Image (cartoon, rainbow, N blue to C red; front, side, top):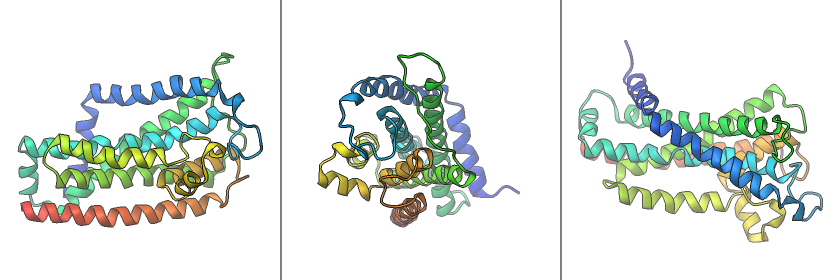
Length: 274
């Protein structure tokens, strides 16, 4: 017999799969970032200071940017998870789900699991695209240059880091979706959280170009922690303060803390509507 969690998760995944317009848009955005922003800014990377550690261990700006975009997409891909909750409430679907035998934990976790799958897949699509650009043999295109052999453990660390980051923000945005009732309020709230987190990370900015206060903020930023795991496993640990597993541990701590808050908000909202 299928559990309520499995059934609800399957429903959410099918809804994503049956929306080709959303899939196309989700793919288009990272393609534009990599092919326009990444290629455009890589042209000025020669103007960046060449001192060791300016890009930490990254061999060039595009490689650094591409890894940053993996973390960037893992976050932005979760933005609509909470919006779907609000739309379900507006169309009366949420009332039927809340009245079903499924527990509030199953309702919440099903949204989080489904909401984390799409951005995780998009994140690795971005990485594959960035690597593929380097294999085109077109001199005007830059690609992601992996400068060291990636071990099985390293690959596992990268996958876990991206999954944790996606699940963290999916959980937070789903909880916000449960708490709010209007799409306008939701998008205002998530942008107030999403943009500061992304722009205070090291996903886009070269580490050596950051002022000291921004470096301090980026050190503890969950997006930076995920990106550091990726970059260290692809380019080496030189110029990083800690090995990948330490950054991964920090990301686990962030995920647990956010999930505690998100679960509390979601349970409180679902209990009030029961």
